[in-house]
Length: 561
Picture 1 (cartoon, helix red, strand yellow):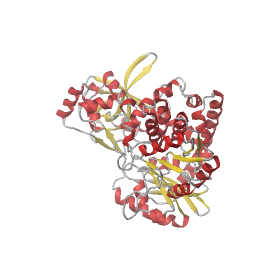
Picture 2: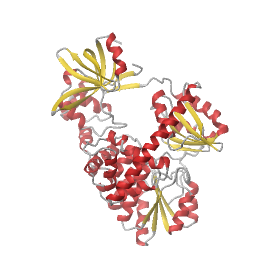
Picture 3: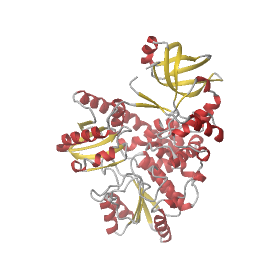
Picture 4: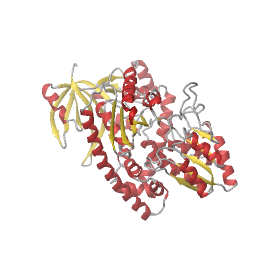
């Protein structure tokens, strides 16, 4: 009821043209047009993309130079240290790069920084680690784009550095040009010359370098890249969609020992593997280690071929995830208590002494979603506030932090998620500044519901559901299509299960089963009116061997609003 409903519309004749020429239904044609897929050729490419049709990795700036250095390292038998990150994207990227380099014939070690000891990013500790093991080359994954000092230190010690990252580069305040480390090669699709793959995750960038090394798609790494892509919530369009589409099957088939063990402790055996399911099961367990302890064991899990080792580590991650959930709930409730005691209009900034750094990002996400405001959650220790930011689609949080950089010790991230550090003495000034920046750029904080097409119930059939399945995997940038229908008669509404709203919806002679999960509170709306507008996804419900069409409700409102 609190959402704005937006129905996307296109010239009816063009929808009919695309439907006819691409041999798809009009509702699917409208959905694809909404996603910028507007010609029969575009439709064909979107629906038939495979690993073999991915772009040439050498189109990404820096890869060719990096490959020459990697070849030279192999020829000279130079040891390589892969520097990763402690989140799921960085860990899967590390596993890809380590496995690829070892297969390439290079002695390879890896270093995962500890969130609490080392902080985020490529730093001098890793350079010392490289010196200790006698490595002559460091390759970063999912980090390093702003690590100017660490890179310079490595060079002074005679160690080459290749940066692979996907985070926003730091821009010079005057020239607005990227300030890049002086590495042998800097590979970041966000830099110029990398069009078409700018939204890759850290694991996706590592996959592209591996593809360049072997000059083939490297199918064996797609399962790892899939987990990294889903973990980082990058848009599931273009090559990201191909990565996940190709990576789901090997995860479901249990090909990788470590991932298979993780599936077992997550209770996924025997269940169809979907992108959304992995985001709420495997990914949190992978992230758990880095949130509350050391994440190096995750790389061991992803690389091992020993079932005993895999089961042991997967069980450990499962326990840590349970511990993480308890810590998260405590910090979340404390944050809500603080929020109740203060006024906010444009941005939410909350800081607490000793809040666990490993969960503040998740807490920020939950509060941003609940209150629909850009949210900054910070943990205070020794007069330093260190935290995470999560945003709403209308606000680029990284750009917002750029406007506050004079108040910050450091920051980095993406449009929707970022990290930051500042002195506690600057907290009040930061809250005022970021609130002002948000106020300038966001004029309406009402969440909106995007409806792909206004259709009649008679257009919903098994063919349409099969067509929709062709658009999978669903995720950011490629969400499951939401359809809308007006003036539907409500028949036999009732609450079932754990607060689910179930009913039949009728339009003329067409009657359809519908269910709204966790929407029991809307029963009062149904009681006050017998005719509603509904937004929903079209699905097939399988029950006791039978199949029937069902609408999964996303929103309801009285008709004629």
